[in-house]
Image (cartoon, rainbow, N blue to C red; front, side):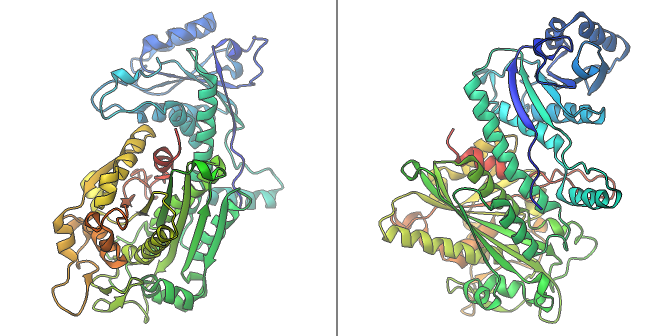
Length: 564
């Protein structure tokens, strides 16, 4: 199923066009969402009409909680009669960041939708953020994009809901609602650079296209989004997008030959063809080759359901494991967003490894030794540590391609990234935040720092974890019967450095250990492992349901690797 068109977005300065009696009310809004930092910042609304000022004054007088939560205030002088007041709270305290704006915009637009709005205008009543007054851990430089993304997020209807509504509509002969809004107007209280705003809207719209692909796939249950159906969804999404080419590998013999760790991890799924593994490759090439500054190789973990394999998940820990594909979903979303944006500064090569980690007579077993694509003997200790297995051989392929390009004279800087919901340890360590773990060349090149800075600007903060010698020592062999240990036999959350050491395993098993700092500039390859187990979901369980899906790290990658 293709993605529905996004709501149209336009920007303007001043409140005059929003009055229901105004001759310039051509934006056809039916609600006004005022996002404000404190009650005094609402004074600008008094310029709109005496009625709006009176409505706000009345609300303040009867509600002692005014300013602490979203409020809907009837106002006849506003188009649609709906005035939604959505406070941000402080924006300049120790831990304040751009997410406070995003939260207020989404909450306000969601309330307008609940009231029946289809075409809200969002008025930014707060003073535009001052970069010189920001704390080191806050970056409001992308606030327009962040607010636009928040409004679009409020309008989004998930794929599984869209499909259900369309099916019901076909039976009842009624129209299905597959997008909650028709349009969004962004209204600035102060003069803004129109070109800057238009570019921000363009970037946000491209990011949202990619984010919606990631979230659509993520919400799919284990049967709606099997490996093959994930591939189909990606193929439909990128079809016709300039610069993107699509390839898939479904043949089991080819997977066994090219990606032996993925093949063996997926063995138990072979009994049912619809759960067979597959590999999706996406290539994006810049429309302006002369402007390309770097070539990114992105590997995504796409485990469409994780039973743990023969190392079975027990005690309810299997719940939510349809989300174990969110790394691959995020990479696919970033590739789509980059193609939609027609970003000139970067080329992409993406490998997405999809499998169902099933349990059965042909399951991968602890104690097996599997030889990786790079010729490294891997001792399996825990089949529930499958994510690092499915990504390692694609990383080896990326390594091979980078070295082949260098031998052919291509001097474009290149780096490898893995994206995965890999460990529970990262949530134990950082809560609902993502983390990076980088090798020496990536640390020297500042790749993990770029992700951290971009995440801060786009409201998707990442923590930079540091790889230590203990991580490599943990997986180093102690006998001559293997070259690397895949894992221990305990949950990552019960293991010291449980989200850092898997990166050391990937480095060794893929052959990247031969491309460290000491190998020299001609051989060194930057590598960053991105664990999105915390950031890909919002951490809020609605009753007995599953958490919401955020689309991380699509916006962060865009902020880190697109030109400003």
